[in-house]
Image (tube, rainbow, N blue to C red; front, side, top):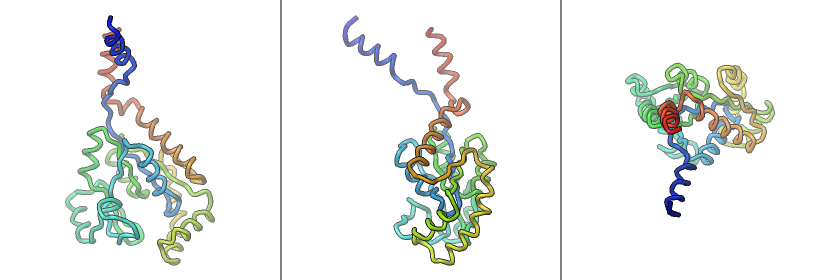
Length: 225
């Protein structure tokens, strides 16, 4: 056998096989200020195989936010029409603003084996779990303490004091939904939290139920033995 043939055979023997996989919906929720958005961005930066679901919202853009990248910013009338047409997989009212997930891009990504990350609250997580139960992976992010949560809300300087107080008052009710999630991350140190979130993502991708091409791979493997 020639050297080139030997090299080709060795590469073939060690190449990682492609096994068709169904994508997953990676949901990250937390009370406001606990760190879910920072955690979500770090996961996206660390893993090129997951993309962000861009929600529709009636909220006004914050400083630095871009329409179509951070959110699709719409008026209430447009949002209501989308909801009535069934264009949203989930929607919720949060602090007098509406948020929702466009249906078509998410369903297409899942069919194509792509993973989609959701930065949404417990209401949205419940609706996605009802509509696509076999596809969701739910992570709830906890603050390490009440004092830490309040400090984070104040130091991010995006909301006036009365809004900070409103978010703190709502935090206990939001945290009460933690048993509805598959995993809980206490976000005391962001590096450790990111490592935990990535480990969860890796494990969930390997679940047998999501490996649609596994049966064909195993049959081919057995036939070759």
